Structure formats: C-alpha cells, structure tokens
Image (tube, rainbow, N blue to C red; front, side, top):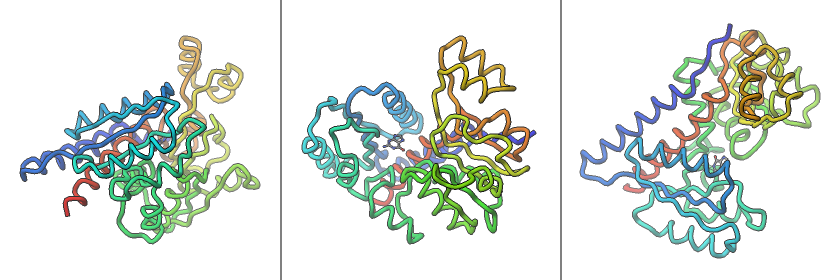
Length: 305
Ligand code: GUN
C-alpha cells in the first residue's frame, strides 16, 4: 500500500513558516505583507479558490485586499486597476484569478503586473529567471510541490521524472524545477505517443493534464511517487464507476451530492502500485495556496531591499 503524501499537513507546515515570517517582520517593526487578489466576474469555482486564498492570508497574518470588478470590465480598465496596485506601496503581491471572461486577454493582464509583485510567477521576467535557475517569484503549485517532495525525502537526483501536462502554470515550470534538482525529465501531453509506456518509465510522475482518472494503475512503475495536480469534478455515474472501482466511498459521495472530486490519477488503483501518492482532495490543492503565501512574504521581503 502506497504512502499517502499529505498535502494538507505539508501546507500547514508551510503556512506556519509564513506566519513566523510575518511575526518576524512585526518584531522588527515592519508591516505585514499584503496580497491584492483581483477576481473578475462571478465564476463560482474561482470564488471558492479566492475565498481559500483570503482565508489563508488571515490565518498567517498576511493582509489581503479583494478587488471584484464586474464580468464586463474593459481590458483597459482591468489594466488600469493593475497599474494602481503596482503603484500602491502598501501592496506586495498581485494575483489576477484565472480564467478571465472571454473578452479579456489574460496574457496582457498578467504581463501588466509588476514582476516584483507577481506572486503567481507568471510574468515573463520571472519565467526567465526560473529558466536561468536564478531566484525570483516562481509559480505557486510547482514550487510548493517541490517543497513537499523535499519534506518527504523523495530522491530526485538521477530519477526519471515524467510531467504529464505542459501548461505554463504547472507543467512547464514543474519540469524546470525538477531538472534543476537533477532529475531526468520528460514532458508528456495529450499528443504523446503511447502515454502509458512513457508514464511507466517514471520514478516520479506529476499529473497535471486535467482529465479525471486518466492515469490508470497499470500506467505506473511499481514503487513510483505520484503527484496528482488534477482537481476535476465528476458527475457522470458511468465514468465514476470506471474511475472509482474499489473506492466505494467516492461512489457514495457521488450518489449523495451529485458530483465528486477526482484527480488525473485513479487513486484507488495507484495506491496498490505506487510507493507514494497524493490524494485528491487534500493533496496538491492546499499546497498551491501555501505556495502563494510564501511568494507574498518573499515579494514583501525583497521589495524592502
Ligand atoms: N486559476 C487556477 N489556477 C490559478 C493560479 O495558480 N493562479 C491564478 N491566478 N489563477 C488560477
């Protein structure tokens, strides 16, 4: 039976680090860091994520601001809001929650954020620093996953790592961070030929492709470490029956609530083959928020200098 990599416990540990960092600032007579979150429109999933971020700020003593423009805001007005936050000495980190409504250009908005306040690590300057292996603000999910792997003592040097997914939020930066720690890294994706065979090579598999239950137990190398970044909502009973065979609790949840959360990996199958695996929920989700707060503290400390 695989070891469960507890993302929630790891996140709590990282949040405690942030809390102590904030306390340390206050002890030096400095103000607490401040995160400004911009949520355009009323997408319910984004509202849940933003609420989680604001709650974690409160838990760690980080100040937060919520800016909630309506869904029909013009690009120029969104960028003017970002400009104001860039110029605001009291704001250390700026996060524009994605996805944005379709009429808005997300790249233009993200590029508008001052690199020094880019706590998502999405600005090309920060991406370039990561590419070069230099310190900067790095994307929250992969950097917190790296901390978790370190805490659990997962050996990366010389390991075969497969990153499933090539997004700029997770897949690409994750691959660079693993490479930096001397893993041999493959980025696989939906067009990769014979995905199961590629995954079976992996000592470490990071799944971030957004397809519920895509990775089956038979795709895993026995003893592998599996990090499941996917958070998918499953409503289809037939799909759920395939993904959750052997996980009766998940099927009961689906019956009771009409939907159930599921990663990109079939957790029940993975626990029988893998050496270690993150659950969904309670795996990578809480880590992302912890990564954001670590970045906010880092941005605040760096701006001071
Ligand atoms: N939406 C989903 N994930 C993210 C993230 O990491 N950052 C932002 N800003 N929006 C998201």
